[in-house]
Amino acid sequence: MKITTIFTCLLVFATMGVTAQSISEHTLGLRLGDSDGFGAEISYQKSIGRYNRAEFNLGWRDSREFDAFKLAGVYQWVRNIDGGFNWYYGFGGGVGNSDFEPVPNRDRDDGLFVFAAGNLGIEYDFDIPLLISLDIRPEIGLLGFNEFDNDFLFDIALGLRYQF
Image 1: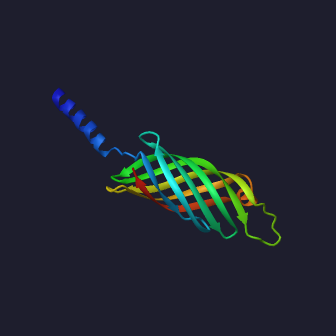
Image 2: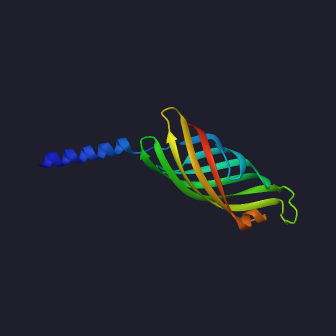
Image 3: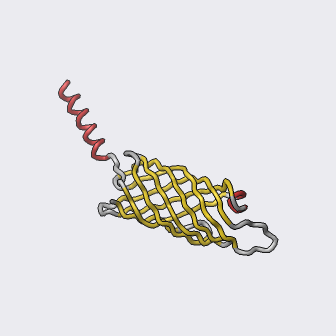
């Protein structure tokens, strides 16, 4: 009976080791999309632990009402679904600089803005060094122009990253 119990415990621990996820030490790629226009960001991810990572994005947004350059940082927790499929969530923020399109009867300031952001997404880790993701990053303005002060912006994007 003791040998069966020990063998069962070893088998369970070995199986857990096989199915455990591992996130890449570094990824570099593009994050493409936006909620009401087009945006492109250079995206870098750095693992911070077995289940955590930091993501940094530097990019440009072309919206209906404004153009902006943004730098965003998000801390993420990564959870395995099955095999190469993972889901992740996190929070962070960023800074940027905007240039509004002229709109009659609207008082909007161009310039610096600061925002807080959340993050929720799903990704697939291929056997080759490619990571594809689809995520949503809701953003709310803390300081800066009126668009961020009054509204949530839902930044939806497709990510393609090289893992190394």
